[in-house]
Image (cartoon, rainbow, N blue to C red):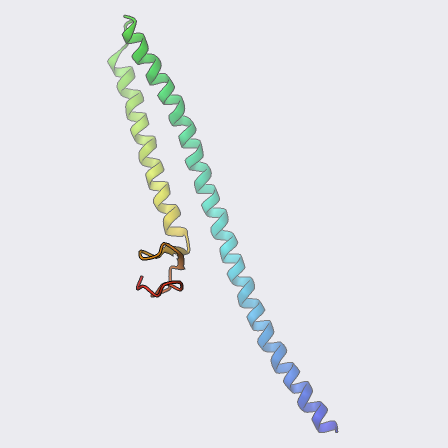
Amino acid sequence: MEQKVKEVLEKVKVTASIAAGAAGKAAEAAGRKAGEVVEITKLNLQIFDLNTEIEVLYKEIGKLVYNTHIGEEVLAEELDEKLALLDEKRAMIASIKEKVAERKTVNKCPNCGKDCDKDDSFCRTCGAQL
């Protein structure tokens, strides 16, 4: 009987070791995913701030255009400066959006549009090659 108890305990020990390894891998994956979410959130906040600044520029440009319409003198340099700032901020947003796309761990299937892992070679839903 004692031998059977030892065998059962050894099996429990092996199973516990396997479970601990799997739990460690799961915790590591969860940590990576949390880090990814934090990083993407920071980038999205930068986009939000830039969009707010763009809205202010639109308002200022509109005011300059209206002042020109009613006959007030507006310096062309002032309008050009605001337009250049607008172009710069829009380019920054495009760059940040590229960074967000690079950091995401999913790709869209070109066939069915479902999310797939970046490492997948085939779509899990429809089987199309990615």
